Image (cartoon, rainbow, N blue to C red; front, top):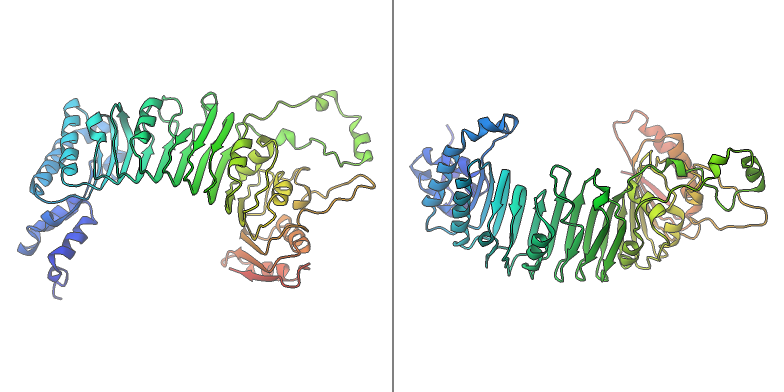
Length: 476
């Protein structure tokens, strides 16, 4: 048998290794040999999960029956580490008696007394966090998730840098007191879904002088009545990722330092009925044909819910913008006017066969310094509002009216296409891009190497005419 090289490592290295695995696993190594018997006291990162993957699939009642051994193990572990510093604690638990709450608090207090830096708490059943738990002079990272309920009266985390709030039962006063008690907070991660009865709270309004990075995911498809207003008042913010259904009003204050925004804003209703709205440049023949349409077709349509105008205006200093397929439609239907993005260098969009590109012409015209244009999927819903950014429906213009294609004035030098499968619509769109983007220098196309027609797809693209003599097509 080979020699045991791991056991020869210094105690400090073994302590680091044991800190990277679940604490129950680390404790089990004490039976390996005398060399491992007392190494658990060197662990500075504890991870406890009351429900393993198998138990999570069982009835909660069955899982509760095993809580006592779990609690005993935690107490023995903390007792063993009575004089050791603890840097990180991760606890996922299932309390089923009120007395369990006090036991949880005692474990956390013990860790905090030893200079705890990171705390990650997840509850599988309701746990009411007391105000004393939300005070620490050493904590730099805090995560609260699951069935935790907060009643916050006093919060002070003077050095906390990162805060994650995931699916909590949290009302507005407690939420704002929590943020106000973190004067040096730099990262905020918020997630909310429709698994609880509380109205929308976290993420709808974010106010922080110190916050630099904000990630919000609000998925409440049955709560349009709660989406009245959204506000970002974060003057130090440099990165924003926001996912939600559109609010009646969006506002953003002082985002002058913002560098990158990733927006996934969904509409509440389908827009397919709006595809047949007539553009001003439709020719007289088309208008004459429409005179025979039913009167119902001429009735004005209800306005789309939501307004993102102030949000879009608030992010105009960014250099990188990513828009989902839903966001493209939201920008078209819910933005009264498109501002100029004078600093935008990188634009990334996603396409969906159910979503249109109606906003693309005015968006591209509003990015005078755009350098890199990335598109994930070229297939989108064909509408008569895509304009000259798209090749799906050729535009018809009134006689005597000459319009310059938005692509001809676009400064894009790098075009990146992913999820390309070579459909006729995609090839037509690529022909349109290559024939109109006259400043193109590089086109990167991602084609699945396992596609049986990959060679044919490459050849089809390479034979397309290019308006730019510097344009080089690469396949990745």
